[in-house]
Image 1 (cartoon, rainbow, N blue to C red):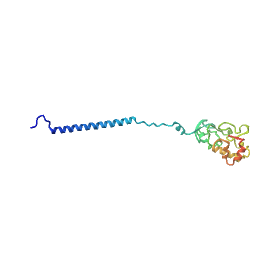
Image 2: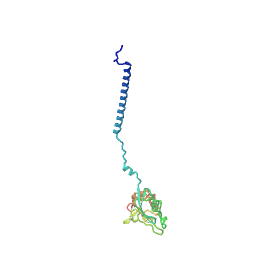
Image 3: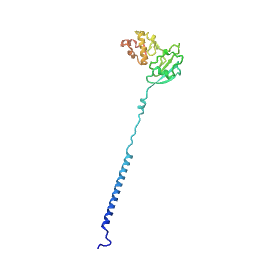
Image 4: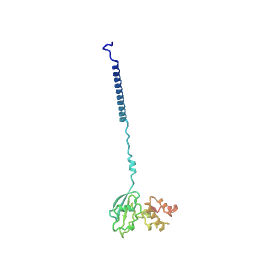
Length: 206
């Protein structure tokens, strides 16, 4: 007959199983806590990538501008800022269009404008100005030197070997391409070669 104080074997085994299961749960929870903690630490320590805007590159991408002083027979004379490649028609439009008394036939609307130019629109019956639209200088410079950017057909015709037809080509090139930037630009005018350029070099300026 078994003693009354001996533990029941059937009761001991389930109790041990319960202890083992509880320990396993504790271990799993601890592992999860460690994993979450490592993830939080890594997230906090990961460097943040900053994107820097290149201000110079942004400014360089901005479109170029030209300043044109529109005066004379227009609705609103003044200084206007136009985009690069603008033409006389754009400058006149910016100034509110022609005035009622404007001599529209005296203005070449298709001519490109240049930065710093003064565009003077004449009224009907008014003699168009012969001054340089950019500098205000007269068509013929001091000492009899002819300014290629302002000289009219009659003035260009006074140059040696330059007749009315070639003078007209010079004016047409100027109207189509803008100001001459150097005397060498004359080589782009049909009919002017190296020899003629050398004969004109001391007689013209830009």
